[in-house]
Image (cartoon, rainbow, N blue to C red; front, side, top):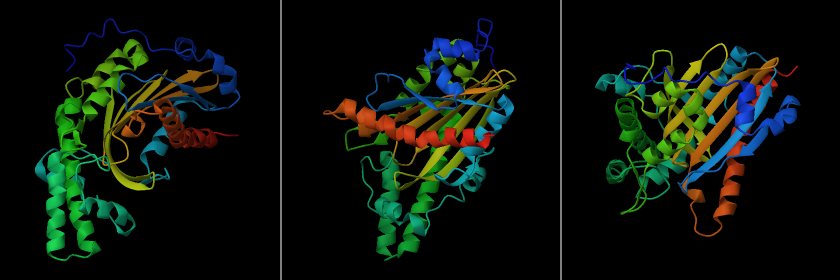
Length: 336
C-alpha cells in the first residue's frame, strides 16, 4: 500500500521541548505549567475565507489518559453542541449506505431549517451544489402540491438530506479531497471545499517535517494509507450559531507511546461554515502531557472588502470561544 512513499527519510517524531522551540511557543511555558490555556495567532494562507486559531494546554495526566479523554469529548453527545453522532462503519454498497444515514432527520426543534430548505436557492445559507438544490426544490414542490403540513415537509427535507450526506460520504471515501463537490453560491459563483482543505493540510509544516507518512495519508486519502493509522468516519447533528446542521467527519489518528496525533477533518457541513480541520498533537512533558491544537476554519463571513482585519479578529475570537470548552473540560477532568 505504501510502495511509493519514501519513509526512510522520515524524521523522528518531535518532542515537547522541540515543538515549543520550533513553533516559537517557549515564551508561554510558565503560563502553561501554571495551568493556563494559551491561545496564539497563526497567519492564514492565501485564501480569504480562512481563519486559524492555535491553542495549547498542559494536562497533569499521562498521554494515554489525556488522549482517551479528548476522544470521549469530541465524538460523543457529552459535547453540548452535539445532538446526535454515529460512527459510519463499513459499507459502500447501496443497502449499506441507506442504513448508514437512516437516523438522519429533522424534528420539531428544527422548524427553522426545514422552512429554509423548503425555500432553498443558490446562496450562502447552505453548502449545496446545483444538483443538491434541485433535489430540495423538487421535494418542496411535491409537499406544497399535496398541501402538506410541517410533518410531511420535515420528512421530505430529511429524506433529501440523507441522500446528500450519502453522496458526499461516498464521494469522499472513494475519491478523497479531489472528489468534494463545490457549493453553489450564486448562478455563476462557487466555493471549493477541495481547495480550502488542501490549503489547510499543506500549511501544516510540522506535520510534513516530523510526521511525513501521516501527512501523506491525510493529504492524499484514500490513495495513500498505512495500516498503523486509525481511520474513523462519523455523521453528526449539532447546533452552531443557533442553527441545526449535519456534519461529515473523518478522523485520522496515530497513537504511540511517545506521542499522539489526531486530525479531524470536517469535509462536509450542511451550513454555517464551508469546511473545518482540527489537528491535535499530544506529547509527554515532565509529569504530564502537552496538548497543542490547530483549528483551521473556512467561512465567507470574513471575506469582506471593508474591515477585513476587524472581521478576521472577531472571527478568531468566535472560533476561540467554540474550541476553548474542549480544553477547559479536558483540564477539569484531571483537576485534583
